[in-house]
Image 1 (cartoon, rainbow, N blue to C red):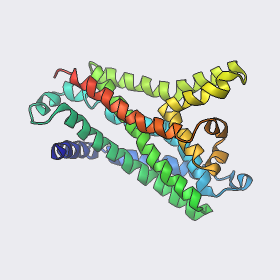
Image 2 (image 1 turned 120 degrees about the vertical axis):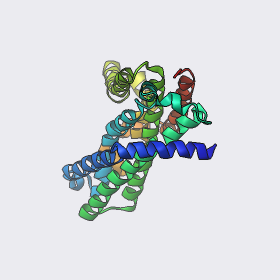
Image 3 (image 1 turned 135 degrees about the vertical axis):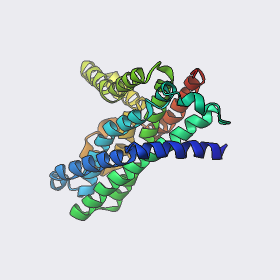
Length: 274
């Protein structure tokens, strides 16, 4: 079983490398992370923290937008597009199950995202450390940011496979993926903000709002990184919602989401007829 999964993963990684996904994802993460690091260097004196701490806070916001986007761009075509090109029918003639095919694609795509996160955030972290100093807590925060960004990418990879299996064409899958990104990353937060303004400091704001934030994987990622580091929370400004939740809430949400999303994708893939 493992050899079949690795064989599919190797083929998918070769395709990603040939299509320049590995280079493009790494380049995008590196350029944006370096730009945010040095553009956000000004508050270090006022906040009393080193440059790497401010850099991690800025890159947390960057990752909320880019990690889901990169994952969905890699995954929306994985089943619908392969089916349109006739590759899925050929693949299913081999002695490999649908679950192994899906897992192989997941390993290859997640490896590409992990490589981009390590190179992009690692380069920005090294630059910030040399330019403005780095304490032990900020180094730990950087390593946590890289690990949680990979988890966030895993969530949206699996959700992208589910949409790709449910869509009738790769064009429809692309539309679904764009809508999913818009809902989870943009509209959900706008809805929460409107509800908080309407509630005006009531029960919803104090008791319900933090849990609804933790239910969204993008917000759970942000809360985890903020609540785990006092300095990052200071630079990020999200201490209120993070302190209202138990420490396990955001990590539990971000760890459970990839598992649930993968089972959803596996169930949807079973219904696809090549």
